[in-house]
Figure: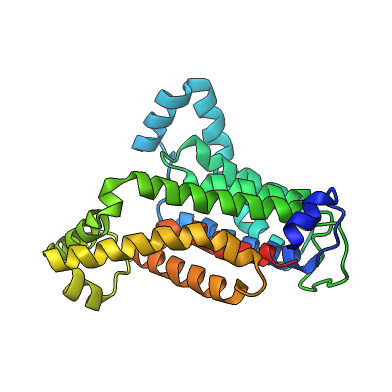
Length: 284
């Protein structure tokens, strides 16, 4: 397996630099969407005078630090939405990547559950450590060890994300029993007409009709699906590293994240987008 050969050789094992170059393009594209969505979700006026977010920031960080945040917030909001497509297109990729990472890290200051931001910063740091990010949209397939260390690090981070997620789900009786998903769909089916931001969810109508109640049969189905998700998350890292199972693992991972996006498309677009594109790093 190439991953173990790379580790054993002190990351001097030659890999295809195009793997991380393609991930750089995907990373920039996903972050372009995320940063653009921030403007449509009230992001521009987040810390405007009188907004509750401004008061919360002062309480959380103190008056001085909050004032610094208010000053840099909008300029960085603009810079990052310009830098993300530049990164995807390969225009000054290292500089664009630094701006993108700074813009993403800024969200730690005001998001209450910044899991997607952590993964964004971690995967972006992998790109920062790569020796050959390429330029433009061209891919260099000449084997070298310029990106081997960064590629192995990206594999480790994604593997940890999957195994940690599976462990959290195993520990959660609510998830294992199927009640979490059953109650989520049931609640949405009954309150969707009252939601202000209905684009936050994209649950298909057949799912709502046939699996939107809390009958014993439906809970059993959701329990089975919950167990399948846990099994897939455990098996994916190994399946992605083995050449024989790679295509099937990619298909399973993409299908699983597509289902996740139906639950919370806006909230999960960054995480699912980056995780699935990180599959590029699992082949040498």
